Length: 195
Length: 195
DNA sequence: GTAAGAATCTAGCACTGCTAGCGACAGGAG
DNA sequence: CTCCTGTCGCTAGCAGTGCTAGATTCTTAC
Image 1 (spheres, each protein chain N blue to C red):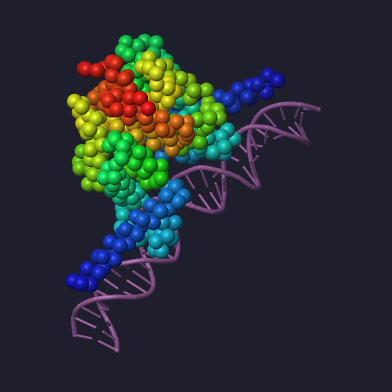
Image 2 (cartoon, helix red, strand yellow):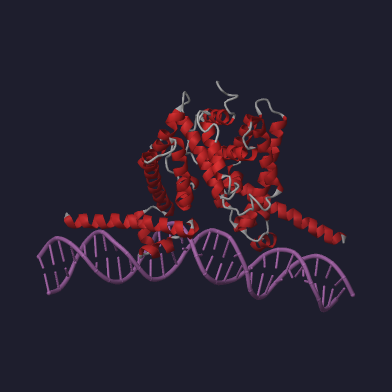
């Protein structure tokens, strides 16, 4: 009983160890550097051990992505708690900061093909939490527009800015100007009308 | 002289043949299926021939991406010529249709890391053309907002919608509703105020 | 016809994700 | 304490990747 418990606990710890190692490696050198061999090296086990925890490399990336969603949700919640500006701006800045500071994590979550059941399905709780935070940010400006749809639009705009910026496809300055235009447009021109 | 010309012409044809083959392979089976061996097979040459035309696989993808930009620019220009609705909506629908119908091409252009000098530098003409078409679409609704920055915001929104939709991260229906919200928001609420 | 040169291919390297099958070790039974 | 048994992790290997050195074939010019 106890001995069985200890084993399961150790297994769970190693499971998390693998996820953390994959994430660190990705953040330090990009996902291309995350090979099963290097990952096995980092956790000081042989490659087959990885496959006793995850079905394949994709599953490891998926686990990293899900945990990343949880982290994003926490960051957005914290930002909302200590907000100074409008809810919408607070969330937008926190979201974009997350994407800028953790590009590899963001990549796994929202760019790479990681067949997580997002829309229906159901999506993992971490993702629902993150989306819920965005909904809360959009709610004050929604007016009579559909809240969930407007949140998807808000999210899409942020995602577009985040990925195009990261790919160096937008002018590096003008970041603040773009953000201002997005917020102004989505706010029904009620706020941010003039600088 | 003539014989030299013939050789150069044949070389150029083969150059284009490789690009077309890569693009076809990608559109049929995704970029993962585009390996140097399969590509060489498809053009009926051996792998080293590829490397006599391109520095590496990345350069081939880059070439496909640049030509894709030209195609997008043409599609947007044609849409503008035969427009029925507002310029903004016309361009948005054409852009999103392009992304939906040619996902692999879109991927190479705007998602994959393909160090093309986008912002400064200068970017290839095809890309400038495409961006120019977006500018033309945004111009009627810009008002006193900075045209280029607003176009970047417009592009980001479309790009966000395109990629999140393709990754199945948005609700499959509601597409039209999202588009309406984006256009309404960017149009300063002058148009599309009410359905 | 033959030599010079360019164009192309064969074969191989170091790497990838993944797995079959062996060996060592731990736990329980006598 | 010894032996058996089953789990666990490892070594070694497969088929595939991008890329390239060197041999080979083919074309051209004399």
